[in-house]
Image 1 (cartoon, rainbow, N blue to C red):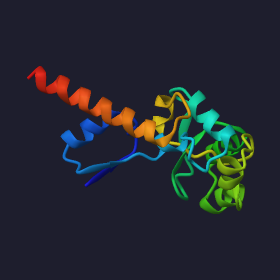
Image 2 (cartoon, rainbow, N blue to C red):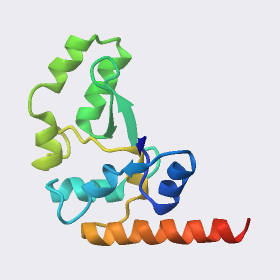
Image 3 (cartoon, helix red, strand yellow):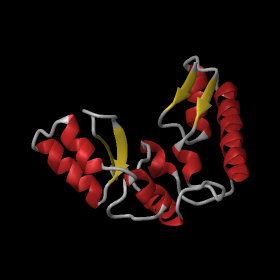
Image 4 (cartoon, one colour):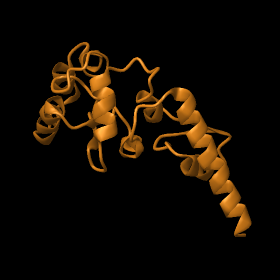
Amino acid sequence: VIAAGGIATGQQMLSAFALGASGVQMGSRFVATEEASSHLAFKQAVIAAGEGDTMLMMKKTVPVRLLKNHFFEQIAAAEAQGADADTLKGILGRGRAKKGMFEGDMQEGELEIGQAASLINAVLPAASVVAEVWNEFLATKSALCNCM
């Protein structure tokens, strides 16, 4: 079992292993790395995000968690009015994710990111993220083993 979703720290990784996972997948955590192909404006929005700045939307099509922006507001209004899947797909259109996450249109683009966004505080090299998460994992494991 590979655990995914909401994992951005070594503590969370250890928790997943304690629950029986053999590995973890960290998507959001690596969006804000120097090597990621996402636009700098999107990376900056991710590191600025706090708790409650994302919401699960488009449940009638393909559920996705979004940062709040003008596009998000359009989707939220349509869903509140009971929009069907075809209406939501029409609002989504083509290339909306590319427009936001890769071209940096922070108002009209789709800004997909997980709940872990609120735990991401800096754009770092991927190697630094791996080292940080691994060191947190080891420190948490050591602290847990020493207190039992």
